[in-house]
Image (tube, rainbow, N blue to C red; front, top):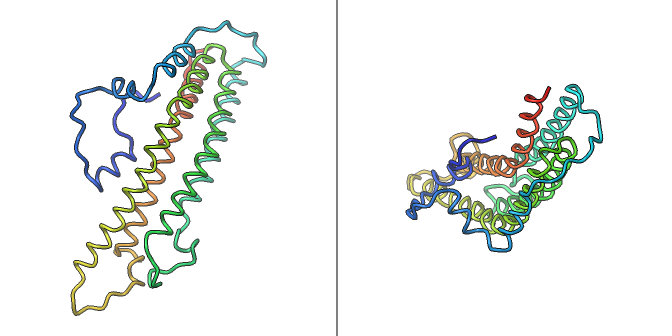
Length: 242
């Protein structure tokens, strides 16, 4: 599992494009996270961490069976990641049947596609996380408390996540206008501006498209981190179980 709580790739990307004032509170990760959790949430999380009585093994627990279970979960994760990555790779302008030269060209297709992809990620990754959680709890009585804690954390932090993730879309829109303005400013007055060149390598729209896709891929990986943590825990137990 991850050993540090440094900024995610998504935060680093957005911060590089739109610098923000650094946090001067002096609080560490745990202290900042505590501000997101109310008293009732804290009680629920504490309850989820209580030890549980082991249940009888319901399936073969030999090394081969455990390896197959982990491999199957890995395949599930890679399949979902591949479907979402393929969706992110699609061109929002092509999907909207728009061209840069169209009179009504603007950020709208990217905004709409971003919202669609976020909904798709929410739907698919919520189901995947629940699936992995159930498999981990069923395969390992010792990891069942971790799965229960993950379920509690998912519910507790869901509201906070819904408030924070739209910020990425707003910052990407700002990036779009920033690059478009920089292009217009650098355009020589006596040189006609050809919108057909914008989306080609070296053009401002091509650069934005790359940034937009990288940000969405980073958001995908951020959303996948809890699933990766559960799998890491299961894999680590397998490696240390005879």
